[in-house]
Image 1: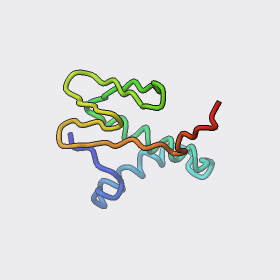
Image 2: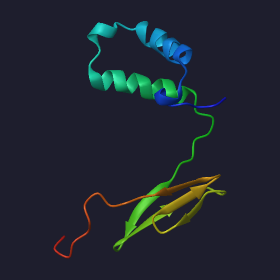
Image 3: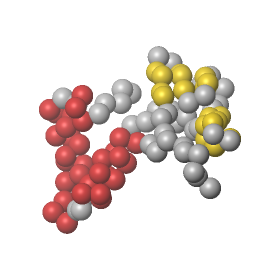
Image 4: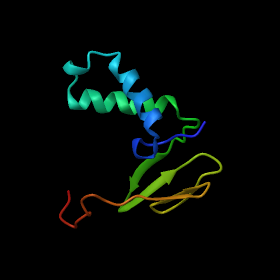
Amino acid sequence: MEVKTIDEMTEQEFEALLDKIGEAEFDKLTLPSFMDMLWALQAERTEEVIELTVQLVGDNLQINAPEGVLTRGNEVMFDNKRIIVKWANPITESMP
């Protein structure tokens, strides 16, 4: 089964998604709840889960992945995908 984002969905697929969401009391949903529902619907369509373990060793990010997923430094590669993890706030010398 192909997993699509909302932008990739056809009009019919998007309508079907809205129908699923419509089963809830839509007018009472908060934005975070709506986004959680979209996430859950997308997660139902997931065919494979890849779990990574990440830890900080000194100043370096260490990523551990299952067999078949390549890692090096802050990069993860599998199939034809390459993920680069970047620090949101760079590490500084003044950190405790």
